[in-house]
Image (cartoon, rainbow, N blue to C red; front, side, top):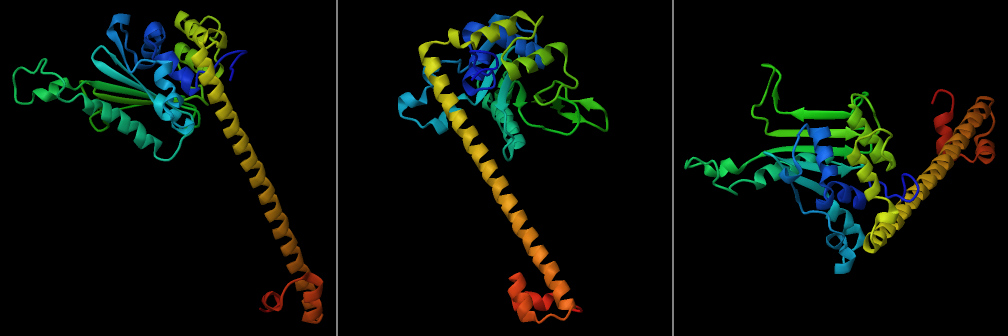
Amino acid sequence: MSGGVGRLMPTSDLAFKKLLASDDHKRVTQGFIADFFGIEAGLDEIRIDNPYSIRALDVRARGGKLARLAQTFRDVTVAVGGADVVVELQLRLSGHFEARSLYYLFDRFASRYGQSRADSGGGLDWRYSSLRAVFGLNILGEEFREGPAALRVYRLYDPVLGEAMVPELVRVGYLDLTKTGGLSARQGAWREFLLTGVAPEGSAAYLAEAATMIEYANLDRKEREMADVLEKARATRAAEVSHAHRRGLEEGLERGLEQGRAEEARAVARRLLAMGVDPGAVADATGLDRGQLDQLRPGA
């Protein structure tokens, strides 16, 4: 539950959406976009798609299963200036996550096609004038690439000519929370906040605001109910993983002991056979069958 006493973890599904997609707290969104995308925008220039609403998130009210809950929170998408910004939380790197991160990015890019005739100039290809740059950031809880870099950003780039595409239309980044290398002071403060729920001393005012937003005392009744449900589900998953891990260790230990006992029996059998002891007696002493003993005979 807490990254400090009485707080939601910022990387919980509920808190993450609340922090970056709340119309009433756009200063937090504004600061995040400036720090990670380099886009300086006024509050009136920021439009949040599907703004945070606890009613919209409460799939239980519609008879949904808790397992579907994560899908409800999945992306944070913000239109700002001349670009769309997509932020996704991916703490566990499941299969094809990189392809999925690109899919969401390009799906957003393509979704703008034909939305407006603005700036079309009356040409036949007016639908393309609706397309906007799309920048994405995936926040990861596991190592993404080897090396110390915490943030990796990829752009369309020609390595032969040493040129990036202009205008820049696509950018995708991966923030690895397990590392600290190469982050700016403000990016580092975000990393610490995401891991602890506490705004580092001396950090920007919007991070202090973000920390206040996820204090349990400041949640409304519905948010607290949802947070409790999510915490119970998280605890259950953690217990299941722990049990499976413990069971796997026990099974691995037992397999190791069995292999050790079998190898010891084979070593004893080799010595007895080399001494000319009757195979029947060797089988009785070691528990190996005659076929196994035949493989252990000298010269076999």
